[in-house]
Amino acid sequence: MRRLKKAVRDHRNGCFLAGCVITGVLLALILLGAFWTPYDPTAMMAGPKLDGPSLAHLFGTDHFGRDIFSRVLKGAGVTALVAAGTVVIGGVCGTLIGALTGYFGGAVDELLMRFNDTITAFPSILLALVCVTIFGSGKYQVLLVLGIVFIPSFARIARTAFSSLRDANFVQSARLMGAKPARILFVHILPNTLHVLLPAVTIGFNNAVLAEASMSFLGLCGQPPEASLGALLSEAQGMLTTAPWYALCTGGMIVALIFGVGLIGEGLQSGRGERNA
Amino acid sequence: MKYAVKKFLMLLLTMVAVSFLAFAAFQVVAGDPATDLLGTEATPEKVAQLRHEMGLDRPFLVQYGSWLFGFVTGDLGESYSGGAVADLLAARVPVTLMLSLMSFALTVLFALPLGLRSVRYGGGVRSAVHTVVNQFLMALPPFFTGILLTWLFSIALQWFRHGDFPGFAVNVGGSLWYLLFPAAAIAIPRIAQTVRMLRSTLLAEMDKDYVRTAIARGNDRSGVLYRHVLKNSLVPVVTFLAQTMAEIVAGSIVVEQVFNLPGLGRLLLTSIGSRDYPTVQAIVVILAFWVVLANTIADLVNRCIDPRLGGARA
Image 1 (tube, rainbow over the protein chains, first blue to last red):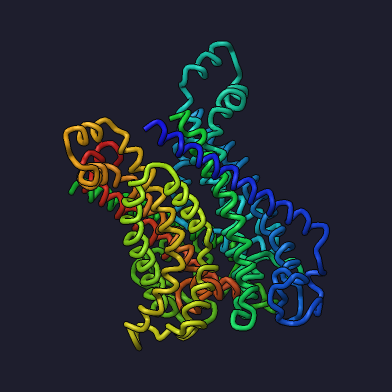
Image 2: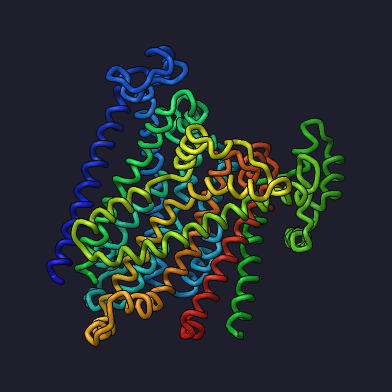
């Protein structure tokens, strides 16, 4: 039985490694794409029209003769930026709110959690769609909207983690030694909640990629020159009969992004989960 | 029974809260529809008159009350594009409802047996393959799967004609057949997620003492799995399935666009595009009600599975 468990843990760590490799490669490509792409992503006639994948054009070309590889690199950059921004806004605000309400409790906690319950009745993409009508559509507006929409889910997770440690022995002894609440929260409790918060960040990132791609697929963010992966995929759907590789490569990029980070999350979750169980 | 009544009251309360939130939000978003409708050449008197006709000069709570009363009695207000919102929605609700029900059915139908099967291998290579395949399926966005399915089944195999949804009024069987493909696109990542969740719950339950005792007394593993472990792990799984309902609804908004389905999602997008707030508001509230209802049903089902839940959680 112990050997079995070890095997499970080892392959989970394999998950973590594989996820890091995939994400690392994608990140490198995206960073590269930010400064240099093989062709100008918007230049027409960079190659022959509707050319399948080849060495000159790794992902082929579309019906204007634009290089799809260059377009996908730029698009992945936009998607990754929005997703990362979303996780930063949602994660920081959510953790802060969850930490305070979980630690102090009381009426404010009760009220915020009821509000949270009500908000989660709306699917997050629905909220984001509606919010975009207020803020207008564009890369940074979508980033802000998604960040706000993602706060409740982070707050809930953080609240559970913080309130379960509120009366732990090490917290009480810190309190007895006269530590201020801010110190207790962020120096003592926060490091002990990371095993819950870090996987939540990876899940949040993936949900953000999905949400951003969905919204740009629906044409609600990103102006044509800086089209994100979703917008490219929606364009590719129109060329499904003439250039199927366009949809395949663009969608494949989204899948690879989510898959890589998902594997990291999987590895994180069980790697530490067992020790804390 | 008492529990059911209590849950029903909670459901009503949540629905009121949800609709109030939506109403208040759109009050802020929409600004002043009277000014918008009359355009730039409106005189203040004309605006005031129209505001009075539309009931916009009444107190906020009164406006909410009359809107809610209308909503309950089936009067969803007037669309800015002319015509009653209820008429616009009537033809589209069945499509979205059917689509999400079919995705949900597919999720349950595939996830339960697969999850139960996956418990048989506790570790080793098969478990590793399982985890990787599962993570990969979870990474498939419904709109991308939708495009792949279109390519495979519509363009290559010609099993259905993309963009040619017959509609329930014309051809029920054909409509259901068409809906099967978008439903599958939505369901695939949900199935993977549910399998993962079910597997970890079952594995945790398998580690408990009573399972060891049952096996030690000579029960076979699968008997213990179906008779004891499954029952004891169902509660969190049912809760999880109810939460996937929200994701299925979200997925259907996007997938309707991929498959050219005349559902609520398409209407929502066109209404957002034309800033037709009464329609947007009605759709948002209907979809949210649908999610809240799913959660309440899950609570009731859980109570049937585990009668202890009533006191502690209600």
